[in-house]
Amino acid sequence: MTKYPQVDATLYMGGSKVGVNPKINNMQPGYSAAKHELIMISDSGIKMKNDTLLDMVNNMTEKYALVHQMPFTCDREGFAATFEKVFFGTVQSRIYLSADLLGINCHTGMSCLLRKSVIDELGGLRAFGCYLAEDFFIAKAIRDKGWKMRISNQPAMQNSGICDISSFQERLIRWAKLRVAMVPTTILLEPLSECMVLGALASWSAAILFNWDPLVFYLVHVLTWFLSDWILLTIVQNGSLSFHKFEFVVGWLLREISGPYLFLHALWNPAIRWRRRTYKLQWGGIAYELPSVKINLSTKRLLLS
Image (cartoon, rainbow, N blue to C red; front, top):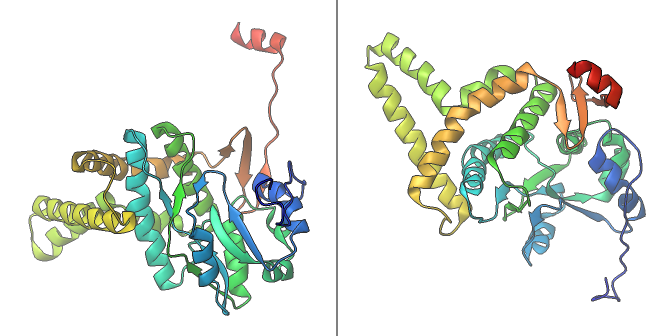
């Protein structure tokens, strides 16, 4: 703002309590003061290129009310960063692009451009404050109004300051809980998108129907899936990868083996822990916050004794 004083800009600190979603609460003051047609939502962990906003605006043609970026990650050092890039460049990209091709709502709100007039017709951002997955319901409402949405030419380059395996897996579990609550059919369909689970079922079917060797079929299935994921990752990266092929093998195997376990973990405990707060989801995605339990020192000593 100091560098460009001629630009009409205002910085808002804090938020307005309009719902259970902290992100909606934080954005509400800025949204209420917005004067122009296009609204850009960009999470603090997203690294923007100089021409990213221009690309998104160019994609916002007449019939579109939402342009979103496909989640991906920046190049960073360490195996945790490799694991994140493998996930977003393979399974996430595969599901995201396939859903977009089939016309299925796949929007993630970490980086997106919206038409303010359309959101105002829907009741403004505050209308989505009752959901934790506000991005899904914003996209659904926009499509229900007859508008279209599209993916930007550039992926969203996530660059969070926290990069470790446990934190990332907790994030994946939280996403799985949201998907199950919003789209209950996920409970049956999502496990079938896993390489290991689908391969086991396909091998069993091939053995019964064609009397093929199930082990050979399973190994060919896994190898084909692995090579396809490598090709997809290199396409999404659009350049040389920041890690060796051996690291990709290890990261890919860890992702594929841990995927079903994380999904079962999400089903076992539906409560969502987001930063310092805990939420419960009703069927349909409406969220409510669970009261925090405070234990004083005397009670803690009693429990310990």
